[in-house]
Image 1 (tube, one colour):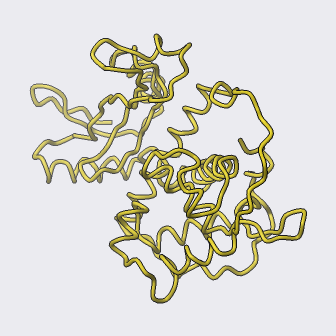
Image 2: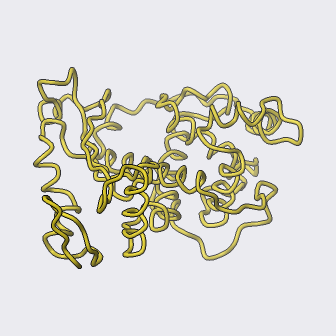
Length: 296
């Protein structure tokens, strides 16, 4: 996995990038960044749970492979990022799970803020992987759940480098976007959500829907399978508790609880319950059972 220094923000701006388009947020892009930040946070949570167990296998000396990074970069640009790419916008959105302009914004932001994502030279003076290659590798892993070496032939990237790209990408997404796109609702947000849900469902005072869902953990360490397995699921799982509005804005995501835990325990452990008990939520009027109205 990557070291902490490779993912820390850099004070100096990166060199001018050809990948930075004119960009303005719209509702769909904000939701996609919201979901991406949630997924990145979940992957970091799994890494904290597993620790070094997943990479504790015996290290063996491998023969270096003659990979051509530049040719792979040129093919990637020709396929998706040239003026006349082989694959159109629909192909891009289906395979990258986001619009091309949003992906380019993310690449530009990561390249500007983090040394790891800049196009540099290695110790031999050979140009390394481009920001496009590094971010494409990470997105493909998030989009498809593929193994680290699945894109070796296409991106000419080793398994170790692919894992570094994935880890640094998740950390970068969290640091850059989480406070904006995966934040708790403000008092104004609460009133807006109330109005939207009343208009959509006819229910006054509805803030959102909270639920717990189990995510299969295919590569769960053997020593932890008992803790993460429950009888009504075939294999080990981790629990995601999320609160989402009707249009899929996730403003709360609590992930990593062992799958053997029931939903009530998960809710009691999450920050939603803690905020309610410690009165850390915005003041707001609301409706309760039998039509009672409580102000602030």
